[in-house]
Length: 261
Image 1 (spheres, rainbow, N blue to C red):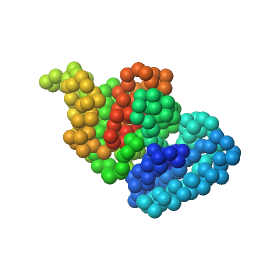
Image 2 (cartoon, one colour):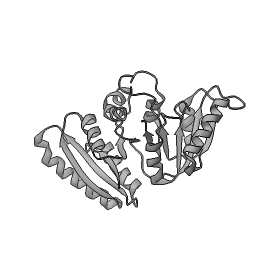
Image 3 (cartoon, one colour):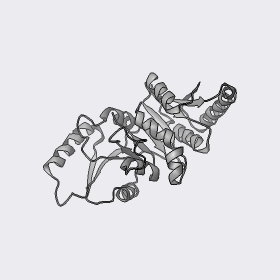
Image 4 (cartoon, rainbow, N blue to C red):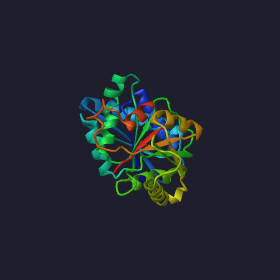
């Protein structure tokens, strides 16, 4: 049984994420969705429990999946959620993003980024307006530096096994010229072997603009999910510094899976 934790605070974004989750997992009978809510005052518990049950019923009316609820008293969502996910051996946390402006992105999405940083398991980040259609094509973005012991093959495969998609492995590097270097050829062969069950296709794109290139790739290849590998545990400490992963998360029109060891 695969455990998928969906934290909800009953905001529009969280409810959309929950509905996305049940549609995504409908028919995956080995999957167990847990709606998770952390409340800060004992007086909020009864109302929160009622809202969780209402959301559970709405989800069950929308799709077919095993759903249960859990709530607990906590004033530190990233800590309590990460602990709960680890304790229950969750394979996936599904969360949404809130806010469109730069300040909203920094302050209102910090819980999502903190949880990615704590890394209890892979985190699937759903854009605010996303609606589930299918996960047929997945793009794994990589700089190939992690192709080896630091590549989170297990967590990524856990998610890929749910959907059995076409896998597109993409490297954007301004130093690519007519042919690949020996190092890149070796890393490509290594990743081809690691993900051989999915018969990956490789793309080496020689441009400077990572984000425009990935966005165009998503459109051209009809990508339904992007997998990114955060390079370090520094999301919150470096919010104002350039980060391909953060910008990718904020600007993507399709869900982004953040997975690292």
